[in-house]
Image 1 (tube, rainbow over the protein chains, first blue to last red):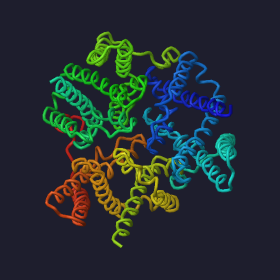
Image 2: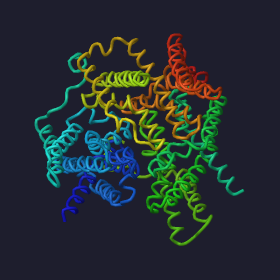
Image 3: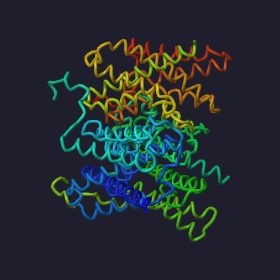
Image 4: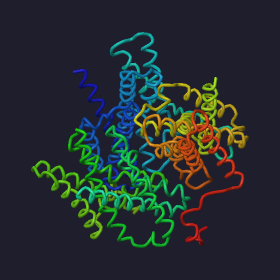
Length: 209
Length: 209
Length: 209
């Protein structure tokens, strides 16, 4: 029961991540195959990189449902072309909920594999944020998360909260739930109040900005 | 005898793939080292990604002949600079024959490693098409196969044919031969009749095209 | 004693590589997180790719000091924004010393893992040069080392010297020292006399250059 709830969120997140890739591919006029690949890579790229680093088989290779999920997102994008660029807020909510779960999954998998918790924070962040980076590389554009909004940092915050909960001694469901919620909250707050990180050359290079 | 025939096709494919990378590198005025790397990555990149996903040692690490093959393609590109941009049809034929073989090799290796056949279709496609994607990433340009012609889709068709042959029960040489031929045929037909996939936003975005 | 000397060079090299990434990120106006990631990837990317190819756990995953080293480089870049673009010669020296060591480490790790020496040359080159390539991919620009100066080739020279020393039968400290020094010397000489590799289309394409 609880497990299938997590699975549902996982699929929702995969779907929302794939949609984000498909939108970008549509803007760049990719063909159907290219768009599908960009959607798939956005959805599973972060977890794939994490699994390669951990020396494990990428998760989607033994479970076809992630491919099906991306396929459904692709069909949605083809059939509802117009709606693909509406409902921004709805997609944002799904995307953020998925992000929270992805970070938690990445954190847990790393700890389960016997690595340290500081590495789990990094792997949680990679799980959540690397898919979007690979998407942008395939679109030949500067990765969005390196210049805009709090995204990857929300993953780091979630990982830190997970770590803290583990240190305090929260077990079972509390640590991952708190971690996922802090990812989601951080991103929502950052979006609402338009909070971003400073740029590296902000104060030096006034002429250009 | 038969094995050395396959090996010959493998080397021809590697050579043709490397040439395709070297041509692009020459257009972008890369230096000799950069051009060699782009040629090498185009030739072995797809199989390398496949092997990393399968948890195996990349195939070129234990068999130097693929490096030699790329080296010969590089020498060819340096000595016959002009011819590098002629004989398009010849290169196209070699490239397509190589593609057919690469798809079959990727499919077989995946099944041999104990994975499912739907994954074998994906791995066959990655073996055939991912090298060109990595090449384009290293050239900082949008991957060609995401916007032009039937290329990766021909790999998928080949994989589906392999699968179908296996379901029907064809053994031995028939399944891989049929798969390779369908890759080659699909690409030839698509090229001859200029068939391409629809773009994701084709009908929505008339103003821009 | 000797080991801690190597470790010191390793950290200096990591710091210098990270600085090179941070400078590029600053030029492109990345935010703090993006700049840190680009710095980190530049510093550890080459060794990570090598370890994935060798089927080993990426070295920074079990030793947090490389992350700390990049963190220090990041703090330096934030606090000394102006100085980041001065001291070019100092950074160049550190960067080159680090490069020499990285090549040697990559070579040794590959031989220790039971692979051939020609592969060790490639892995040494990947260790030294691939981080900069991944950095440029993340910055959506053509990899610098494919168009400018002798950089990767210095790694190849170092690997060849290592190989030669091993053939001759030099043991212990001599082979790696000679290899590292030849990397450093090659790069210094190439820089001083402005030596570069020919471009692939130099003589054909006079109109464009």
